[in-house]
Image (cartoon, rainbow, N blue to C red):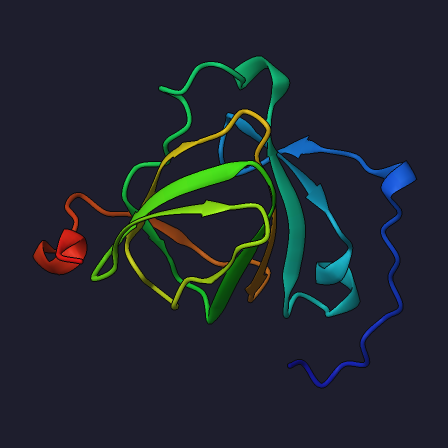
Length: 141
């Protein structure tokens, strides 16, 4: 964590604003954690845009990895399906919590139209790298 003193932050549901972010078919609600931690951590709620609902060809991210130190998500609503390097295929549903190890190659394959997840990662700003091919051991499990 940063040596700077963390700031108090409260993100109220009644004031929620969703914006376009990394994925065009999703929208993101910033929870104020990045500002409060001076960029050490970001937390946001992600959901499917209403105009993307029903178009499951859009609900995939392509193979990629994040150059971050920590990433986790908690499914608030709906379901989401991934394939992970060395871990195979997984479908996660409401109440499931996933830690994606730093740099793991993965691809979101599909999700429900009502998907909502809480995602937390560190640092708040990091690169996402497109990967051409899943390592051979990826779907072994």
